[in-house]
Length: 234
Image (spheres, helix red, strand yellow):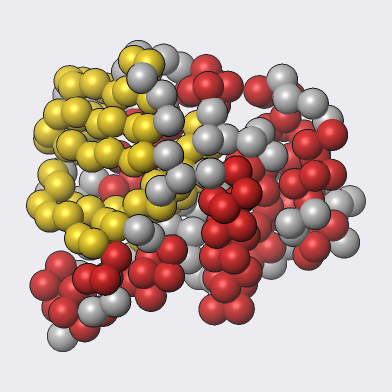
């Protein structure tokens, strides 16, 4: 399994935010996409998930052309998506939120309990409304809802945003367990370099709609240099 993005152009209406993006995620690999706000990272994730149309270029998933495939069909093909802001249904219970994912992809109900074993905090909140959970619990719910369909590729957009370090450690542990147990591939958009470095095998830097540089895992540990060069830190 692999995701191959070739010369991808995408955006909103006639405005192209992505302008020739090339990247690849191989089976069992965690790849980070880093860069400051406004360079197109979320547009990239929405396009890969099928929420935005491809203007030019192609997307190959598992040697299948999914360039014009609808978002629900991409989910059934094995692409899970956790959007920025989590995207849970606040009025539905934890259990109902997860069932939405199962029903949409026609997966067996048994996967609900199997996935929840990895999320003990959610097991105690199954009957609670999603909107009543803490920010960290909502992020775990969004992740659990994406994982319950047993994706082969998980798209994660800014999962560390507004989350305390202890919850981030739990999320990191969960992702690494799924990577080892299921050979899960992950494409991770992040600005938290510590979190990205704890997970990613390698990374791409984005700058104004394009990939500007590739980084190996060892380079991600040099937080100060990366912040100064790419994230505008003092």
